[in-house]
Image 1 (cartoon, rainbow, N blue to C red):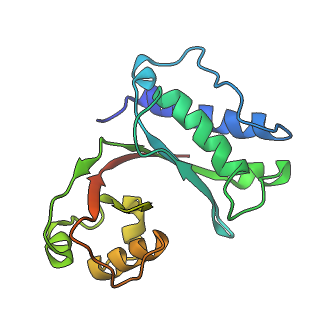
Image 2: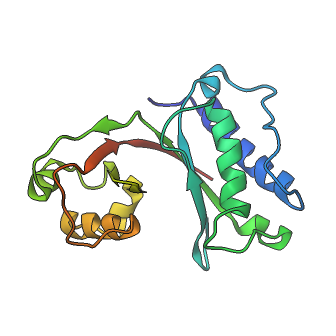
Image 3: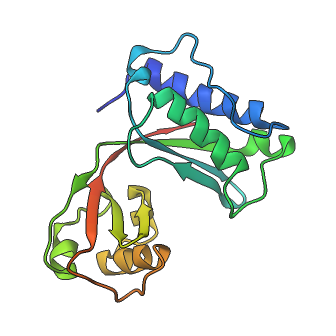
Length: 187
């Protein structure tokens, strides 16, 4: 799953170009793939997280399933993180230099079959597993980085359920759980 240094550098630069291009643009537009390393053309999913040293999280958008080339996914998710995250106002040109960009390239989703929440907590690998919880139209994910803020599996799951619009104590026999790992690229 490990990307080459060339691909990592290309993808970080591509994310920054998408954000710069997005200033004043109404939509993401087409990604710039000239000179793209071959492995960045493979279908992979990613999240792009923007932070600032002063204020922390500034935007985070992504894809859970691979539906396009990784480079195209990075482009679109970088733009969406900067200009289309409903929690934040769009990034301005003045904020551009202070943005830290993190790209989380996801592995394929792996179904986790468990009979209870207790069994799920025992199956989790804190700090490593990203998690998707889905149940009857409710769906949410936490990237592995969220373990830094929620290191207790019980609290991690409670907050994930709340994010999905479910009660913290919710459990149902037909809940769907998927795990994934990420390769993080930062600049």
